[in-house]
Amino acid sequence: MLFTSAVNKRVYKQIHVRNDVCSVDMPKKRDKRITFGQDFISSAVAGFASKTLTAPFDVIKIRSQIGTPESRFGYLKNISNLFNRDGLRGFWKGNLTGCLRLVPQSTIQLIAFSRLRMILADNSGRIDPYSAFIAAAGSGLLANVATYPMDVMKTRLIAQHGNPKWAHYKGISHSFRTVIKNEGFHALYKGLSASLLGNTISDNNCHPD
Image (cartoon, rainbow, N blue to C red; front, side):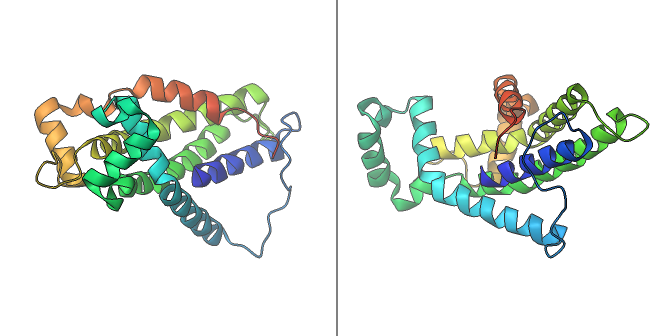
């Protein structure tokens, strides 16, 4: 996700400024012509646009993963059946939920990383690579745990029938209420451990760009 990548780059930029060992090619001085608010908003808009443009691929991927009847005959047949059953809107099912998750997830990650960095830094304000890794991993884990229920709801909205008459959930708020009522609060965190493991590994790889 473009917005998440922008947040990760901001995290690595902070590590680079306080630790010469971590090699991340980012400018040492911030461009004062762009305020934090402008930077945040532009990153959010870019993230929403990226998420929306790639939503059809995400829908097809999830439908193939959960093993819908239409996915048995390959991607092209899956796309054709989805369009015939749900129409063009079917390719953007769950997109709003995914977009709404971006801002709180990235905000929590930035705030948590800043706090963990302050706790783990030495008296001179510097942080070693091991502590930087812990701060980045910890902030990423916290952000993913806090917003994971929205990812679960996005997957369920994608998997259900596009026709309102056959749909199990009527919207985002209804899906939350229904899942908690019928399956319990813990159902909002199904698959969390696998998601955290994957995100921890991917979020803490140093990127050359």
